[in-house]
Image (cartoon, rainbow, N blue to C red; front, side):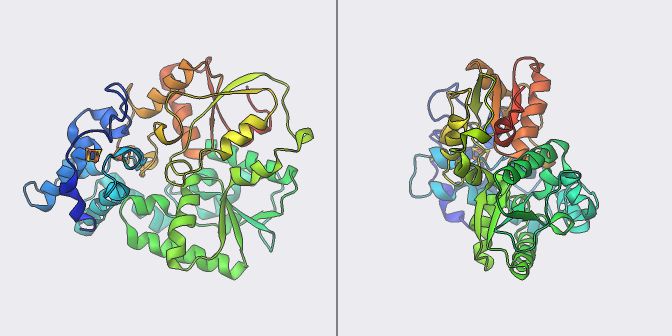
Length: 385
Ligand code: SF4
Ligand code: SF4
């Protein structure tokens, strides 16, 4: 297995899961299960025991490996600089081994089948990929400056569609030259990769790269930080040469256009850093720059922010597989409590998965009157309350 040589180096100090205090659990799977094997260090030793054949492949072992949300919090906080960068890579390599052995959880196998058969995890016809854009006049890509890439949650999930409409409306309002692929768009594959199906990911990546090349795409702007990450960091390995932006990068360029920004309501906003924009791509400042520029907003920080932000729990494929599940100690619910604790009226997000995870968590916490989830584009459009 790749990265096998780092496994025995972990000395289980626990800083990766408890970076500042014993209350401050930052690993979503350890937070949920509270067993060492679900923690980053425990998972390292579990993998080692498995590779040393001290334990056998089993559904329970697979479930533990697939409960990691790929949030990167352990990578951020591990005290061992020589291997910390490869912690998550080792967990993904373990999943790749399970894929090769055909020993993955049924729900993960269903996910891969859905991508292969339908092209998306929602098992919906690909012709419906442009349903989110109905009635708002979004142009199809011909040779505009930017290709706006929406991805599966923005195309098929009701919450993601709302966010996609807000981003497209704003880009149009700011007169950005952009177009979409609509029905011709395909899955970016980020979750496929992180779930361990590297072969299928390569196929998806190469097909997208070839499609973009044929269309002459030079700049891609993504709705989701997950697609941003895959296209920015993985696609170049397969020959991609286009520039990649997250939609906040474009919006930040227009924050001096005060007359285009609404700001009639005074509101307290806290920002949740999406793992794939923050920890995985080290951008903590673009979303805050935007929020600070919108009139009427008071930006307050949760105790855990930027590199310390607790994941919404939807990463690592969990948004679709739900292996981590819900419950009072699910990270999305803990995060909602953190946002309420700082008095925020709005929890601002920059990812369709975070938006959905947190809206569900607010309902589960019965706090719908207390706090709302709004994407940054929706906030700029003044869809705050
Ligand atoms: S901080 Fe690093 S060395 Fe310590 S338990 Fe976590 S993975 Fe192991
Ligand atoms: S990536 Fe996140 S969920 Fe996975 S082991 Fe590390 S801290 Fe836990």
